[in-house]
Length: 334
Image 1: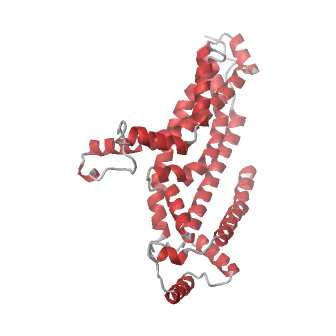
Image 2: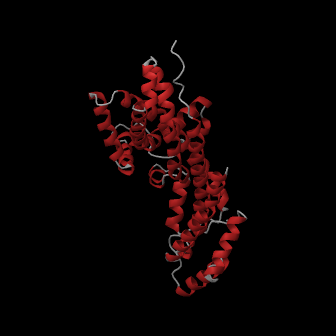
Image 3: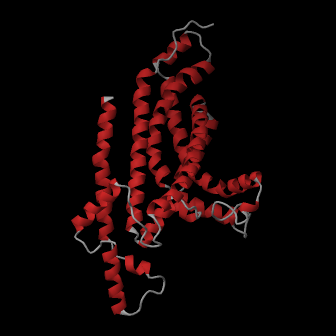
């Protein structure tokens, strides 16, 4: 409990530092608020432009001193009052409420698939270490891990989504225009059809890394003393691997989940932009591009809080689990 409380209290200065750095970084950029709000043509007259800029800056409080803006930012964060977007004048929390479930939906599926594939694959590679099949799998995993996701995204869209080639999957979006007119089974199939390529892009690199990590963890467990004792007791190989070695090997993978959470919660900016997925990544990209500071601060605040909570929970799971692991190797074999 003391360790958990200490770790929890460390989140407070971390969060303050994240918001402070984000605030001052947004102030270093040119003020594109007015030009973004005027539309594509803008206002040609300099007098009208200057007047419009002054009104907009006064409306959003940008004409006040920097320390006043900083204190007002913390007031908005503590009261969860992020005001409205400076581009479309919609409530910021409403925009995040639309984007966050989509990103969480994609990334929960990604985590499930990554761990479902990497754990058995890592165990298989550890059991068949230094064999020809294991070396082939290792080479394939290294190639997958080395390929950048942005390039692979463009390649799969070109060859699997373009009409010039296979044309098997849609180029972007979550559902088809005629989605509402489909049956329940048709809606489910249409959703799977649209998310197949983004899920593949989000999965292949992660399971390539985790499977190699799982292999190393299982090999370390198989070479430990309690596994030798289990073999001396006469336990069969399947029980040794899946009961004793696997249990201890899963502990590092639980703590690794915290490292995946920043990208999972924040959303993949590049992938969501390429596949036109209206998640947190695309919202953050559009906000940075349009210089929408209110949305940027809100996205960073919510993403950082959720990320720190996720890392805290994964660390606590590892700390709580480690002392409780007791391999059952002293029972007489039947």
